[in-house]
Length: 127
Image 1 (spheres, rainbow, N blue to C red):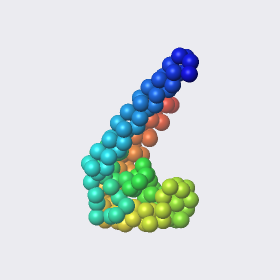
Image 2 (cartoon, one colour):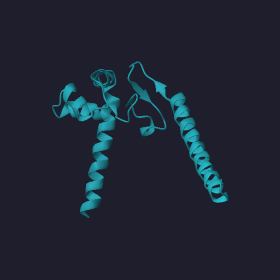
Image 3 (spheres, rainbow, N blue to C red):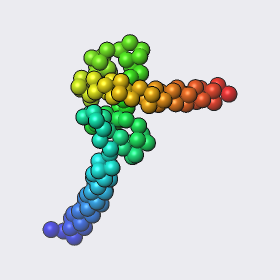
Image 4 (tube, helix red, strand yellow):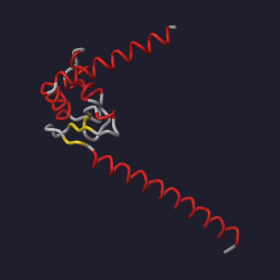
């Protein structure tokens, strides 16, 4: 084997080691976030300070309970919501709605905050 080939192999191994270290770090962060997730009385709804500042989120996704509720408020059925968000299951969509019915004030507050933030962004953009 030539010296150049050996050096190339060592360089590739070094790159693989760095990538592996990055993956290990990311995995540790995901595991830690999972430990810090607060389970709710709904099997598909979690709260995690690392995700949307603790706003109720559907487990295994980044989709907020608020998103499902807003889609229902504009007339979408749970089936249409699942079509729009293929990573969701029908059970998750229904559980999000169940969570909303158990915590309407909280979710309506998030919806209001989101609409106000959108309004402020539009105002800045039109200025």
